Image (cartoon, rainbow, N blue to C red; front, side, top):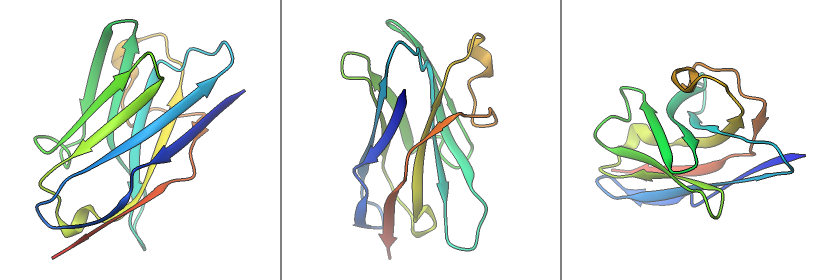
Length: 128
């Protein structure tokens, strides 16, 4: 079984920072590709960033909206993937979802991939 759980959302003023956490719990399933998505009210879900990891090696991928402001990382010991968000803008307000899957090719770990396991989401609100 695989479970995905997000935490760390909240309210912050523009220019502030938040760190989201995604805990991936598995039974003998190597969820080596984990990604963050977001969905604002009335808008389609969009990818934010993804991370492929294998032991001590990791390979991040960022969508344009996240480049330079967000950073994705993984604590392998705790099986937690973090999304550090800084210089937040009101347009970053959304429900943020974490998703996980297993992939054989590192380069395929992007937010365009089909992910099998999803969390329930955590809310991020950025005010002016």
